[in-house]
Length: 142
Image (cartoon, rainbow, N blue to C red; front, side, top):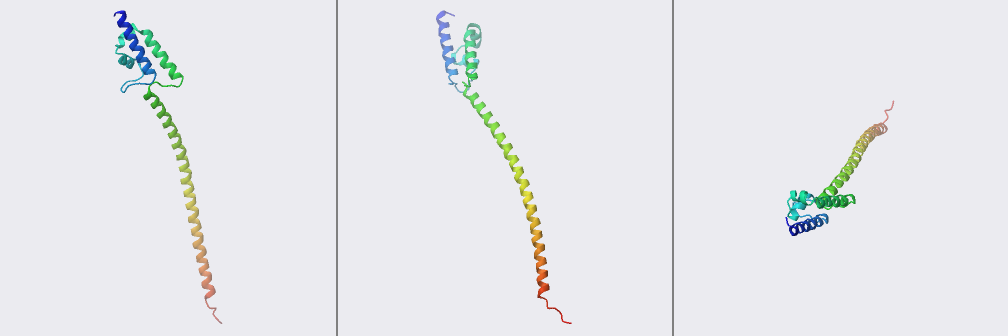
């Protein structure tokens, strides 16, 4: 490789690094070394053999961004966001299931009480009707 060709390749690699780390990840690619090489038009073997310092710099910057709470790869950021949302929804579902169980228990208790009250009302009505029949019957004379 000539010095001019190496400088051009290094410029393409740095440009691809900036693009990936800025979050501008093209469809089908990730924020990784393979995608870096694809964007830069440089074989991975060349990156590892000729530009290990750029690979190390890319890895450092990507790790630093992730440690700072930034996710250059929007798909990975979306995955993390969706994982958090799933965890929240599972927790919410668990709380709702506990609440539903309590409501079902309340329903059973309420229906049982209503049935007992209905039995009591029916029994009282029978007693009332029997008492009214006794009161309305003529008393036999002796």
